[in-house]
Image (cartoon, helix red, strand yellow):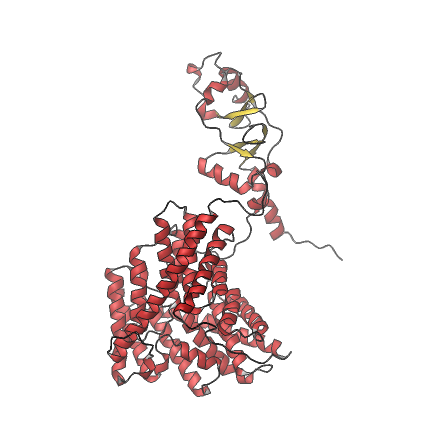
Length: 574
């Protein structure tokens, strides 16, 4: 077996075929969800059965509009109570929980009820985007497809994430940002078996999206090239966005705690939150619904400052109350609107670029800091606008907001939801030290072995007596491995045949071994699965020539090296 950059797999072609199908399914799911939002928007606000594009802001309901989001919340509360409570929330934490703690298994109920409940909520004026629900819907559809075949949990995870990110691509037309969302947030690994399906599914979704949506960027714009002094303004914008991320996250979960103290079943909470949404929508109608048109106006600086302040404040309040009530909806679109509004507010005082630039920078920084995915946020902003001049300021603003968020908050808005269910998510990951080292680097080469012809009583006395040094020894015929003999497998002394060769004890037992050029991680996984403390190391599977023994303590050697790299401080220049 040759050493490789990546672990080889003959199942990549099969996973790729699944990913292509999943890309198509997720695109269809995104179209259906957006169609449902349009349908329910027309039904709730205009009392018509239509799929035509409309906005809640143009309704003529007057004060009656207060009851519309409450009605939508009531419907969703009933769906969650008697259908599946997994439809509550904004989708990404639920997808994370399924990936990390649920073996990437999602139910058909979720795949059906999540888009329906989100269509009802957003169509009735809920201040959410379609991306969170479609991420969960695409992931659920991919998980169901994977569950119908003989796939491993790791393969199901790759396909679930592929479906989720393809759904995001279908909504926004941002395939590269969706891939980075998988890398930074959902996969918890970077392997060909996971990256390839995600990239294929997102690419397919990107090619299919123009069949039902306008091609090109969602918010096309081009700002002037920033001045050098914009470097300082980017830091200010990033810090402001970071503080906004922290504030919104804390307010959201404070509201959620408040709902938790109510003497009412959680089924009624979305209706109560809907009343607050309705009141906010009565005062500021453009805060209702998805609001992509509002985001476009903010990025183009088409709104007066007083309008922006009122709109952003109302949007932030009704979003926090609605999401804290446990209703169904996404967070990306609200974060984009609130972040862009922040940029419009502080932009006139930031030198080095016009207000449009700072609206875009703050929008991306708010998204990246809140979700702790700065690379995704940078590329997402670029793919939404194709504004090349804003790329460098966006990078700086996003990483500053990300750094502030990491220092100021122990968990993100996504992982806090999971932590409240008693599950901890550790977001950092790197190359496993066991992946970087091979068995021949850590094994013991000077092996004490047992000749195959030695009688069992003599083996008992010589190797497993009072001076026993280890619990298992390899048994060899010449230099060919016959197996590992463990003390517990020896017969009791009363049953021992004085001339029985020890090789007979291993007859019919499969030989378990490690190869010298295998990674330590592969061998550690095998030992853990088989409950073994030691494995014989052979030259090849054909020769079975014994070359060493690897133990669990040997496999700790790479970890000791990593600990030294992380903790030992050194100085070489004086």
